[in-house]
Length: 62
Image (tube, rainbow, N blue to C red; front, side, top):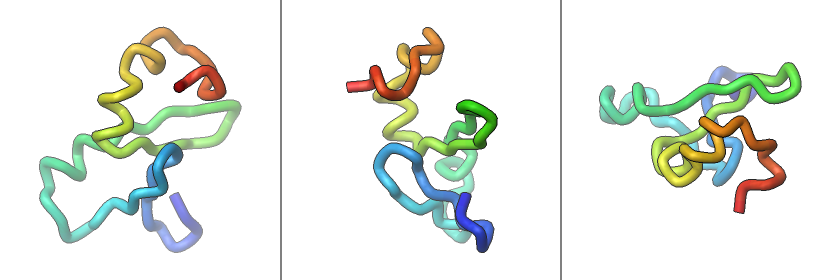
């Protein structure tokens, strides 16, 4: 999340549109990484679901 409350994807930088599709906005995934809240857009979350569930460090994500 940026300082102004806008959520951006930690992997690709995509911004969440607060006025966009509510179902798509709910599909964003949040995770804590070394004490920092990180957001993933639905596409990046889907692409890395096994890495996320396996709790692999983000530097291993290809």
